[in-house]
Image (tube, rainbow, N blue to C red; front, top):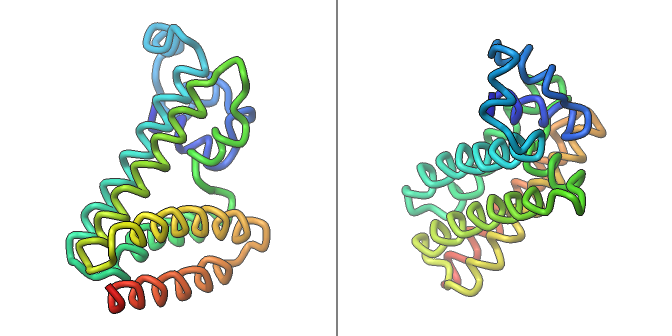
Length: 183
């Protein structure tokens, strides 16, 4: 159910996804969603954000082990490119979807999103540091990578084209390589 919620949030957003949608997508029995998520939709969304955050972080971690600064950028972007194309530009980031729709009555959603973004940044910063980028620069560059890629993903959806992501990736990889060489 958590995986289905994350998937549906990518295309429909938090507000556009209901329990019925999650049940239909996951094939779970109707009563099970209320049993597993007594805190309601906010609890489900919080767990979906955590799941999505960890899923993507695992990919970043695996790719940054090579010690190449540009691979850290590729790790964060290649999956997004595939998601955009395969979904016909309907799917974006479930963490962003929940973030932009989080409300004061469910502050845990913004907290979960902030934790996911921070984890990605930390993993990217560590990978960049291992590639020779000085720690303070690696941290700033990691934040830029996350912000730029998330923004590019939104532009890709709007334009129904991967060109914004490709352009951002090219520039970020050049910056990462340069930062590693200077370090």
